[in-house]
Length: 491
Ligand SMILES: [Zn+2]
Image (cartoon, rainbow, N blue to C red; front, side, top):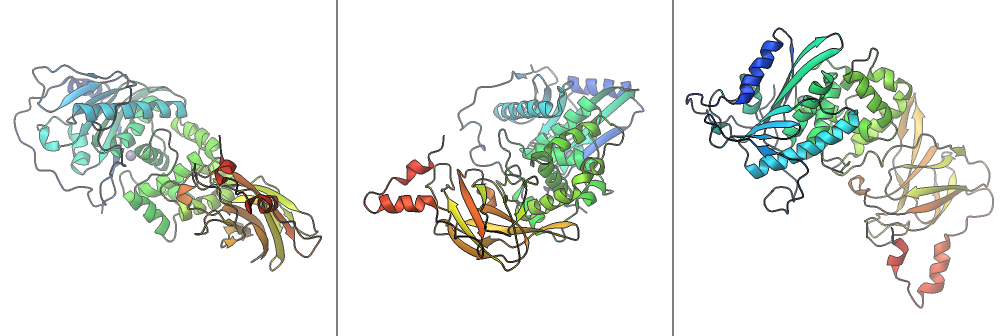
């Protein structure tokens, strides 16, 4: 069974219900309208570990300079039934009932409006109707009965739930979602993804998709594609053995709100497919097909022809994922043409500092020696010093290689080994050589520039010339060292 995310709140007072706000009336009306229709619920359980902590710099709304407000949100006038400490806020797309402070409620609504704008663009449909939300910071402030019973258990458990009621006739439908969430950063975001899908499409898709996308919403931050899942989630995914397979995630007979571990796998799959450039197009189409209930839409149908590649990249993702990891930058280049080195011909490849493994275009033979000569420098930070392909004192920035092989229909990447600026290496096996700039997987995005790697079979043809910039450096550096910084200026 699941652990609850938080200890139970103190039982709230049993004062007479004084809150008879308009949303209750609206809800009642709606339920009566669609009486007899089924309800779909997506409970959301959180890891039993520490609650989500906002990242530095976003803890205090009051302390930070306020950005210009994007949306018009209006605190609703109090009426005789209002409860002290609980307010209603309205924006173009939300009706929020909350005990958060005005500042915190406004910050939440601005964040949700921005996220909603982006997910509406992603799915190509404007959000339909107003999403009603109960966001609860301190349940003891809410009089008994002021939160509908359908949301109370989840809030008591330190989590969230979205209840969508839908009535349909043929293709036409009317759907109304109500979100219940605790007032941490991620839960309202997670639930709003469900509510948007529920109200706009009338459904949220199969479980793996519905919860995977909502988890992406939970971790969503404006203009940031890097992994920022809870560190406990990342550790769990990296350390789990055996890793859960793709079809295992997609086809599992699981239920909503089952366990945070199941949510972690769904997030991993959706995050990878939505961000990796090899798969994001198909993932987008598949998602729309699932949300609009197109016949035959399925994961297997969408990705069957690339099952081998996707499975490999998924395993790479689980092996290397860290906070800051960029699935887009680590997308594999499956189109590059490779050639087995048999003659003295030189193979040349451009390797970018901020990308993951990149094709050298050379196929090596087990035990054979190969020469390499690498021109250019790169840097490991946006304004960092230029580092040559031998790397810095810690070996970061060094050119490293690894061999991709196919064993029993499965791609495998061998242990990485060092190259550098100039020299030779003995192939540790047969395979296609991939190269990258050695750096933490979490911090590739701020790397700059690229190098040109030349490779050649050692036993054939004249030896490779040393990198050009070495010659240049010898001439100038003895007397008058050129400032390094001019070399890595990057517009
Ligand atoms: Zn959910």
